[in-house]
Length: 58
Image (cartoon, rainbow, N blue to C red; front, side, top):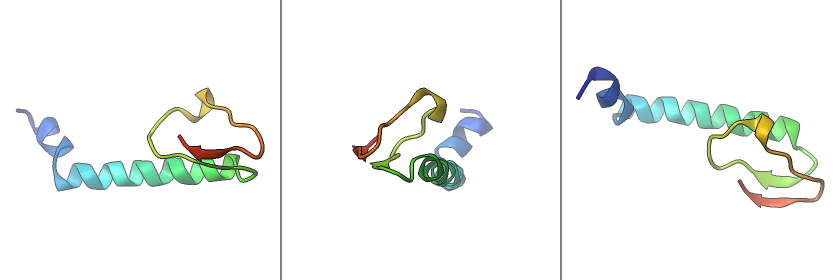
């Protein structure tokens, strides 16, 4: 197992995944403050569109 693989599944990897997830959630809120849909997984924001008065987890 290489260094990248070890870091990926370590506490450091968890830290970086957490930062990435928080950035995505903030960007999602900025773009979709008119609805109650929440980003739960990492995905490309340009590929998803949600209408007004929508709700749920993505």
